[in-house]
Length: 227
Image (tube, rainbow, N blue to C red; front, side):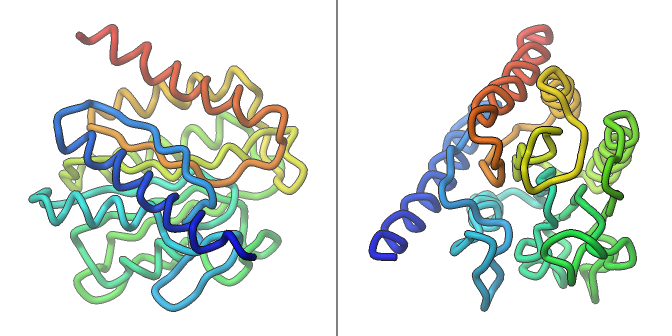
């Protein structure tokens, strides 16, 4: 549409501002990016995404001297664009928890055997999960992803924050309730890394704000307790 370029450019700039806040010494920042970004690849847009905000933020951190950055994608849909951008690189670890691509958009990527290529082998980690996956099972996969991030000695965490894992989301099939997003934020804070949150999906319009605030509240509670 007429406003697409202006909106997509502003969304990418929002991601850069959040990254710059972290590079300036903040422990966490939230970028309210609209449109989202994680389906945008090197040569492809789709899924409402035009520029890959998470990839742009990660590259900013690398350019500023970070040795390795983690991108953790918790959106219900696989971040195929983010994976493609970093698939052959070892300076960004991409980990994604998402709906099984056999039955979930984008349908062609996000299988567990997709682990990177060349120097990037082992720096892509996918957790495809079936419809109706319990919060406990999802959290166990998250813990495993965070353990990979820790072992890779990542210096900064970029979270592609899709809140369409909410049970009431109209185009998703996971089971998160409002309170579970608080627990998600707490777990992310316990990873102990500076964190950039960037908004991805979420289609239960009345609940998006509640769920995002709950993630940030849970994160902040842990951060305050360790000060």
